[in-house]
Length: 304
Image 1: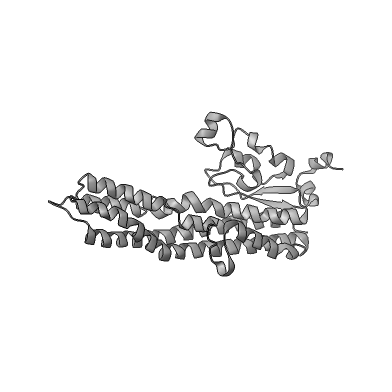
Image 2: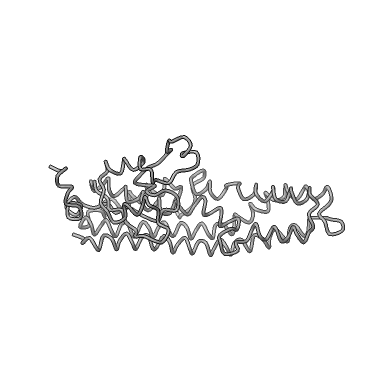
């Protein structure tokens, strides 16, 4: 049987891996942003026309329509470099979970590892050879039009407003390339759409092992940092039952959207997957009843 410290260390290892992988993805997207800016500037310099240093001329409007092709071609190559790194990260998370649950169960989990990995690949949209499944979650992310729409709106405002070419290039650079705070167009896109999914993926594959192994107790794991939320501080390093997790949605310290705060209704919250919600770095390590009672003896009063 794993010790309590070994269980905590397993969770810490996964959380630290996810944080390091997200940092690596951030570096890759920053490199890609530089290439996207250069690609856009090459095309815009060739296509845009002006007068007295300003973007004036009916032909400039045609550049807006060309953005679709420019960005699509770029994404088909450069973004897949980032996506392949992301997929390899999910594979590593598979391995870390398999290692933990095999040790926890005395290798019983080995019988379920292939099915767990296959199921998660189908959910997130990864097919054979790590190819994206058409219409799947990751494919939809790659084909998302947010970046194209943002750039078209920016260019439209510049060419219809007679922006100077100097200001145009400066503003385009500020919009496309991160300045260190993750403000670039690709880093914002990945942060909004992809980063949280890596933590959620880790929790979701843990649920697969939970169900197969019949585990009913979870250790809220991951440690604390300076800006940890009250919701997570209260739960960190503590054991919970399925029933208790089901009541987390009623906790007033659970982070809520503006709409949820106004309506008083939390939408789509799955405690075991979402935990402290956006940007939450914690995870659940599902543990045996024996370990749960050791870590939280008062649970014995509620067990036969």
